[in-house]
Image (cartoon, rainbow, N blue to C red; front, side, top):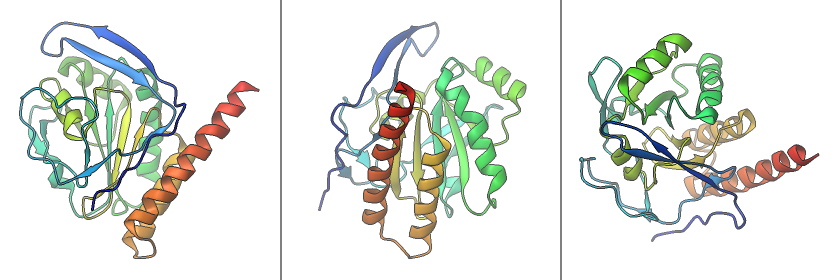
Length: 230
């Protein structure tokens, strides 16, 4: 049976168009404070090709799609390489300020937790030279894949328009637990990771984890907005 995770009413969105050269053409940049609530659960997506992305509103897959992209050295990697443990997949770009703010948080989470707890993979929808330069300057310590050619298709495989940043959390079985649009904050990450641990330990079902995470993300977003208005 398919279920729907609906987006909270009244979520704010800011859209802009980045003009550039090369294969990207343009990237649509929009930041929303709310987590994306999956509109429809679908069977696992097929391997990503270089075909045109699916239209907006495509379902987010139930499990991690079969994506293959090169790393900063040009070596191809599939997300399936990190199967067997929970995974955080962070879509970002060097020109995206909220994306840059997330990187120290992601690095901190990786250092503070056992390597077996989860892995982080960044997918940069950006030009290779920009990503290599930024990764070296900031000494990013988790794997980075570069979507210079396939980044938009990779985002589309998750049912997403090229909206940055967004972060996908999967459990050890590769099931997508939640997808957060906009800058990820420490309190949000801590709550999601705790629920991932509960699912992995058999203390919480996947539907219950999704429901709890959705409610918590909405509550935290409201609290953050209220604090910003003071």
